[in-house]
Amino acid sequence: MKTMIKTLAVAGALLTGLAGPSMAQEMPKTALKVVGAWGNLTQYKNFEQPFWSKEITEKSNGAITAEITPFNEMGLKGAEIFRLMRLGVIDFGSTVLGYVAADDARNEAVDLAGLSPDVATARKVSDAYKPVYDKFYRERFGVQVLGIWPYSAQVLFCNGEIKGLADLKGKKVRTGNRTLAEFVEAFGGTGVTLAFNEVVPALQNKVVDCAITGTLSGNSAKWYEVATHIYALPLGWSHVMHGVNVKTWEKLNPQVRTFLQKEIAGLEDRIWKAAAEETQQGYDCNAGKDNCTMGTKAKMTIVPVSDADKALLKKALTDTVLPKWAARCQGDCIATFNDSIGKVVGLTAAAK
Image (tube, rainbow, N blue to C red; front, side, top):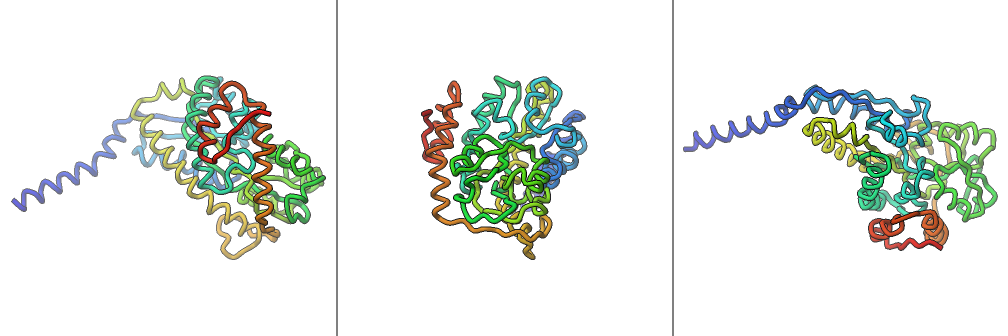
């Protein structure tokens, strides 16, 4: 009896071990083309590129292959991605939601300035609102949402001393989206719209005094060469949305779709888990600390944040940022925010 049980256990183990490769082998040969986010940043280098160019091929036993190109290497700035996906020019694509804020106020909802003081809150906000994005993008753009993930914490890089939010008065600040511009203006500064790759010369030539980006993103883009101080107050997380043209998606074999959804969900989890580490690495690398492993050691000053400024950030969100956003939020936009994100963070949006 013991021998029979052992034999059955071994046979079961063998069958279990073969199940994964067998299923992968049953998938038809599928070649995909993907447009990724900024190619010079760690999110693309460490996650997007290896995922599409290597991981899915290995995990599918060669059934699925993909070519990925970052949008900046295609001469794009990011705001065009979902419109090109609607036209069928791009199949799978990623871009920063803040870049498409002009298309609809919903694109700002997950990353209103001051909404998520930490990455755990940012993830809850993102997960709560993802169904809203999926419905909106399916109906308006013919795009299915496959994942949403963040960059490192968005903070102020300045080419001169900054001690707190009060120092924004009179300063010109590059902001990646409208909600950040409204935050800056609430403290007497001026928000300036610039593409990410235009920031270094703008800081160098004093076109702007400060600029907002991720702690590690700024290091990767060598902002430390033209900025001296970082104010370590997380203003947002610059969420990236990854999606696929619905017509392209529906043409794929059902097993291929199931496989990709599972793997992209895993990619999403890994990027979220890395966000906190990358945020700290951004501080450490820009300050030139020995434990910098993800970037270039620089000599910037990291300015600590006072409790008073944390309270001011929250006040700016509730008194200025949220009401102004709600005023341009059309249709069911306010209701869906209050039913999802609002419940997560304990806020109610209302137009004034």
